[in-house]
Length: 436
Length: 176
Image (cartoon, rainbow over all chains, first blue to last red; front, side):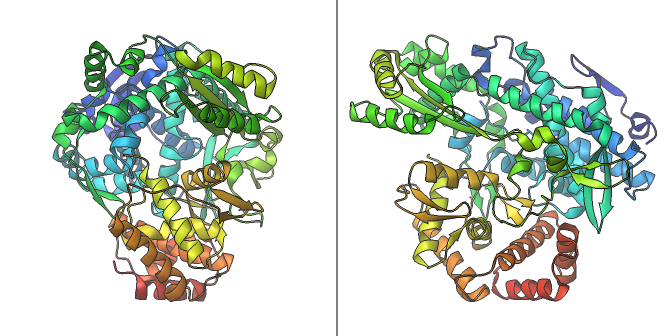
């Protein structure tokens, strides 16, 4: 691909600690300057992870810019790969790139304050992606800039997308996508950890795409397999050490407990939502523009002053006590987890008041789950292929001895309030023969 | 408000079992995907996966229900209802839609309680392609357009005649 910046007139630039400069077109700048996009400056990327890693204060605003940059790098890398076979002329490439960049820039526009913890309460049964689509479709300041590109941008971001958008959709939210490509590096950088790092420059140039029997296939050349392995391992280690850090998950539980009691009473969190057939049909976007992490911290401070213990914890004035923390790699972990919870209940402790529990299964790659429904071996539509030296395509999960050997790991955690810690630790010791 | 999606899934599982439909993973996945076509706002994300539309979130929800003994596993491809949690936030009209969807899918569209694995894959994928065309609003939702989409995902895995029959059958029963 020729110089895309020149072709798209991407002459605006924003300094970024990871990518150097992120370039913007005039239309993209207009989107970035809308109040609803600027709101993302006030929605943290990692919620209360900053109580573990103090510098994790970055926002979804800067991540959205970074995701657009990474999407561009991945797309130009695929198009420029000499082994790619994508029948697009120059105009088609530019149109696709323009739409891809809009989609990447706007992929998080529907995130509510504190992201996932509040989303489960405010948007249920729908998700921030549904709200994002509603905004792109109905919020005039953005819809007017996107103009004719709005339907394809929604098509790229939607889970129900046309086959012609498969490549662009994979770049935005596939297994090896621009979203993760940016947040792994950005979050690691902000947290000061090395777990999410990978070889960015090589990763962006590692992929190609071709069609076989009419089906699009994304591939890496044999020599680049380790780049993908490293990326997936980085994601796994990052998840285990950053979002699933036991102190952070403890704060997520406190936040949910706090929301359960207070969120329904906050007028500024009532977004006048309505939905039908799996899409939002009404949202008060003026209220949404004002609803951010600052709004919630305002409520937390107010309740903390009034003496609410959960609110005080959320100002880092205490935390839940982890009394059981192990993984499925330990024999009997699942049984002990259930037994301890049963004993806590039997001892009169109240779930989500006196004790809390958290369980999560983590896979290095979701590609491993492709045969969940059926017995017959069939390739996942979204798999990544390895292009061998004789130009054959082999499923990466079969090719890579590292990826095929990795099994899912489940984390089991039980927390109590400080008041019940000693009693719970004694129960754990009796059940497991040791404390965790 | 509690997680409505989990409550919708529990209601669906109860209705399917009462209706005599085996709770295989493919039956659950595809029936859940059909719910939206009956006006149920299930917010789980479905992607065009190995055997048609598939939700990893739904799969995790089922595993979680099995972990807490609400479901029993029958091998590694099916479940059986033991005792599912209450659904206090699910409205009556939503329950009626779930029931109507299961009845329509198994009695009218498929015409049997025990459809084959391939039938579920074909019908699920046809509905996915139809929904994608409607959502994109870029071209008419015709039989040829749906077939073209189907082949872009599945190649020649299924004969055109079988796919066309499924498209026509669905069109007769879907309201919108």
